[in-house]
Length: 365
Image (tube, rainbow, N blue to C red; front, top):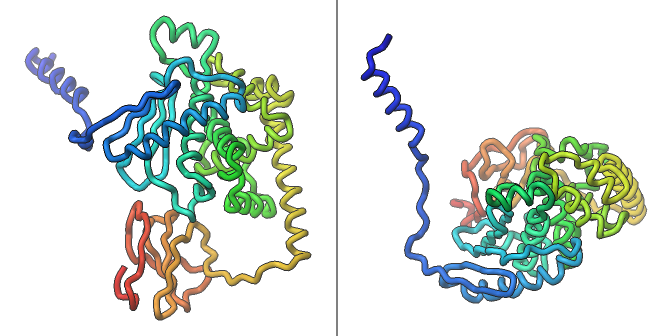
């Protein structure tokens, strides 16, 4: 038996380990935070973003007026908390219903060559997308609502639904209310058409998660958005909000097929198979029309796949590109004599490079 002091020190060491926190980067404590209150929103922002904040507040109210009828006449009973941040160049946002409905908006427009590049007003598209999430996630009824009333808000059943249902619904709504957005994106439509013609469309099992194969987690937006848009067009727009209603009282986050059948008359599996068949038939019809009209000549620069963006030529004919799907990600070079099936040479290892340019003469990046 070990002596008592040893057991005491062992317990102290274990407690110290459990209490140890990971290092965190502190925010700017000198920011002057301000708040705008509207009828249905409370928007917080740092001084310097005043004009963007006032415009955001107006768009938030517009989003509520437009999206609530589209998604089933549900709206949060309390004000939605909104944070407008400008801490980087990433175009993104987020939303949650726990512990209260809140949205985060990043004050950076998307790049035109990315999958967010099809917009008329980037801020409006962002707010409509994130507020759609609020209208999805804040639907809480039945036993989960009772539990929240007793012990505080801990349950939001819709928030546990597959990402393709949530992100797909938000992509559908952002596009249905603007005439732009990712449903109308030529990039997304082209990607889906190419995979349909190759017979390589992902199954519903793959898009329920994040497949290793391309396009990874983007299936939630690309596949999910077009799938939910197809459901709205073929089964009626009321079915989208109806599905979220049917899952709002699920204490155990399953029963997707049952909820879809109640809302649309068909299970989610059968709807997905019908969409895949329709998408493939449409892709083949479009291909036939394009062949008759005459295809645009092209010259393959690579056959290794992945993502090649920000193309720049050097004086000697070397092609530079930014590859975010490679290991490691960074800037790669392909000389004119590089075989098509060969990988490019890494020039600059850089995770998260936002962009680059070549100095005159190609001597420096």
